[in-house]
Image (cartoon, rainbow, N blue to C red; front, top):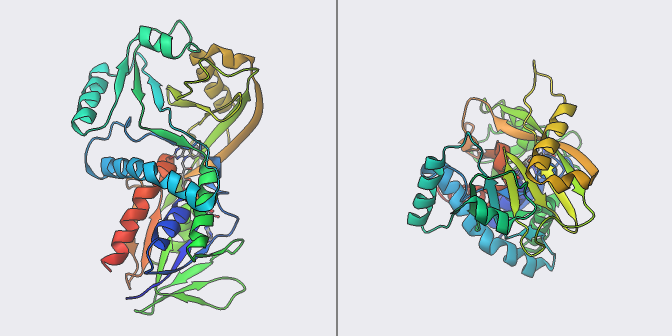
Length: 361
Ligand SMILES: Cc1cc2nc3c(=O)[nH]c(=O)nc-3n(C[C@H](O)[C@H](O)[C@H](O)COP(=O)(O)OP(=O)(O)OC[C@H]3O[C@@H](n4cnc5c(N)ncnc54)[C@H](O)[C@@H]3O)c2cc1C
């Protein structure tokens, strides 16, 4: 069995794959990243895991979500126990406020389907919403969907814990180390080329390089990963919104209001595509997400914006997200990237698929 593996990229996807593979004794694993871990898309993410509440009900898109939410139930305590690190997460679920444009019939059907699938979703009427979430605008008199089994997790803390745990299991990490290209001419191995090190040879390579994947893979497969910008803000309030004992993520018009400790809330994120190939953060985008959040929870207007940030989501062009595949002539390059808006959510299931692919050669 070929057993040395190089992973290129240590965002959430590379770190999760490294950790999950390190739990078996089968592989000798090295991870390379041109920066420190969780600096690219992962460092900008809000960590909202919309699994059960997603409208996907079958096929690959649902299986990835279901398997990830299942694995998160064990992964978080497992990592905390192993590393002694605290991974901030919110298990009070997600409340999505439906708008007039939402098809209530479709959501009612989803609640039924999830029950049949042995998951749990609830539809809340205006009275229930007002009781549970007094911070909401009293003018909101619509319906909400509550998903108690979906989570929110701090993506940077999670990635760092995965790195620590993988190191404890024997994985070697090489940060601030850029990989320039991958050679796959030899049928039995792959070569990683850097600007200053001797060639690194391993039996398999797993490309988890996000936006860096396109150029690394171009000699082997035309996998185009496009950046889609997301901006977000952190608002600090004089006191917590609503009931301190019930602080779920609230979603309105695709904008997440995420309790993130103390009296702070993350609000985001914008979804901005490049215009004529140029990616520029639009100030109006921030105003728009702030406006939507305040229209949902008017008390947010009393807060102060203490942080504004942005990140680039890796989105595959002309194919569904994510790309989890085998590429190249010798079949020794695997790719797991292009998770677009759901990389934190889909990391555990992605790692499982990659693990299965390695076992089936
Ligand atoms: C504002 C924002 C909010 C988001 N919110 C959520 C959310 O709530 N829930 C959710 O599930 N997802 C969310 N996402 C999406 C999520 O962040 C991404 O899908 C996920 O982080 C992708 O992870 P990754 O590991 O594939 O990529 P990245 O985190 O981008 O990591 C790729 C790594 O590869 C390294 N690399 C690239 N090229 C090379 C090279 N040649 N050599 C060495 N290293 C290389 C980079 O340095 C980087 O560390 C959000 C994204 C943004 C921007």
